[in-house]
Length: 180
Image (cartoon, rainbow, N blue to C red; front, top):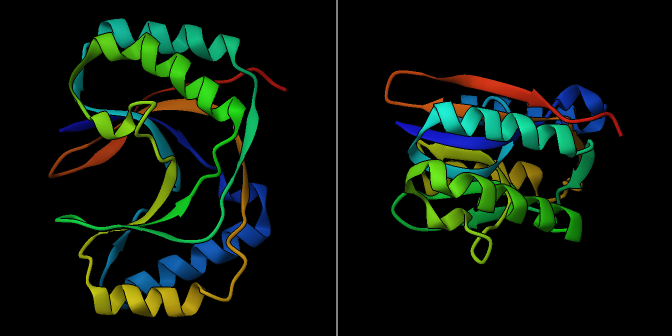
């Protein structure tokens, strides 16, 4: 099992972003790849958390954060054994400060914490494809997207605890941020 502290992004906020996302989903499905159905970026990922401590901490944190926006720019590719095609999220001072605050608050509740998400390593991103990945198929997706403006803006309104195992994925909890 993998559990993440993440922010799911509402595609209905910007019709142009939804059109681009729908194009990516359609192309991936045609090619037999499994795109991520709901765009999100992860703040922290672990094999497990002590949820009875994590959930109240995230709830308290959400009460101190106001809604804010993130922007994407271009396409990215994490190479390796499990490659990932993604939209990079532009790092702003506000985003980095929020990430550091969350990291310090929640790390003590994690088991098998992924250090890829530590403040010094974190590359905020919105995953497009990570399963059934093939270079030929990814080339086809990139070919459809490389001339599109992938500079999208999303309002971050919640922090969620999401999970994924071999059989299912879902949301364990969600906490709304304060209206801006």
